Image 1 (tube, helix red, strand yellow):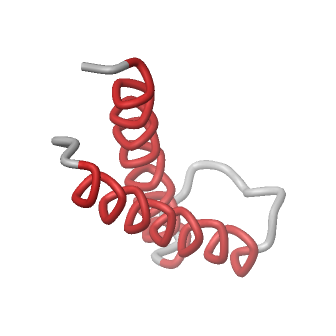
Image 2 (cartoon, helix red, strand yellow; image 1 turned 180 degrees about the horizontal axis):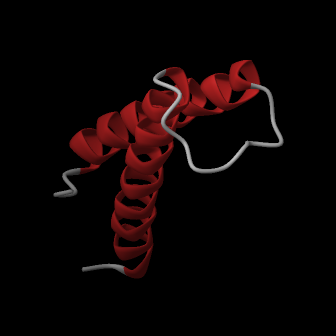
Length: 70
């Protein structure tokens, strides 16, 4: 596989993992189940989560167009 394709697959997988972790944290935040107090407002973290999901979608579309298996 070409180097840029490998980087894209790695980027996608890392982003997918981080997005999942942030989503879990937000769910726990809303349920008042966090064992720490975030220093950022919920709304900012939520905006980050939605932006990350949008970027995942863009990477998926690009991979489909370029024939890259994620």
